[in-house]
Image (tube, rainbow, N blue to C red):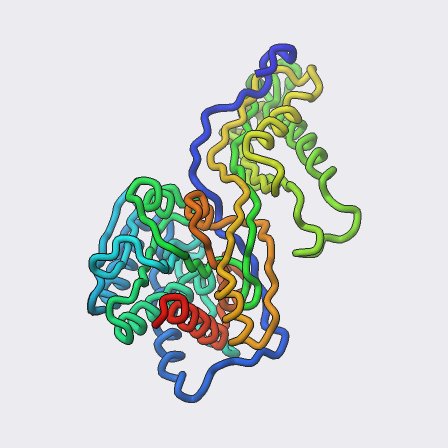
Length: 418
């Protein structure tokens, strides 16, 4: 609290949850040497069918019964795999499924993904179609298609190499931060491994090496109610909050480069997005006494959660004293910037199979990677070609699914000496 400013903005306790799934997508616009033959048609059919079946299950945050049904569906596909055990964990109303070889609580390689998908207002939109070599449907690219790939990798490789040190972790809360999923598994259950493969960022030949830090916070401004015809008798919380947010927006615009922003060229700077604005007021002729907004802040090193919160509070505190009254900044979820340290062998195999030079990219978004990186566990973060993430017509490219399967298959076998 800034006593000189007579109250103003105070910081509440912060819950260290997680970030949000990033949305780096790339349309396959260049020729790539696919290691796909006629013998792969069975794999293509299995991956397509499993992905489409998963899309049909609306496993959103508001539908716990559907999330449970999705896990039951996956268990039916995995429980016949010889030499592995399936363990379910529950935290905060969210289930996680961990599949590991018997007597290997910490497999050398862990596949990791999530079954939760974004809510859509259209109730009957959770279905898919195949068109122009893509599977279209909510959650197909984030990340039901990748779940299908990982399930198929588990079944294939454990059958081919009994006792292989390969595990799988599937969670159901990545889209809201991952606190009950990967964070719980790693920090409370003690899940460990040598390397992680998370197909939830980058692209087929874009391997993520760093992610920005994240702050999701609520900014609340208080006022005094009055009749709309006599505004001088009240303090309009909405107008006060707009004034505060305008200053915050102007401050972060100072970080933006002068030239047009291009991903991977000049995007590595702090940003602040106002994503929700609301008031409890429902009457047109009443001055609102309360208003709040959600902000989504992303930041690279050398900034930290602490330094960015101090910076935000400083901006919100530095306004016109005429605005008066008390405001509150409530951090809801935070994450520090992360270095992923991908395995060079994974990078080499990606180049060999695709015939393309990889790009090591830095992501503006976040993922569950940070929970593993906190324990010095390297993360290999790339994925098939996807697009229109979090939209009804979200898609995943089928040929690139097969290519990504082959990248992971060869990497796992070579890394584990099979």
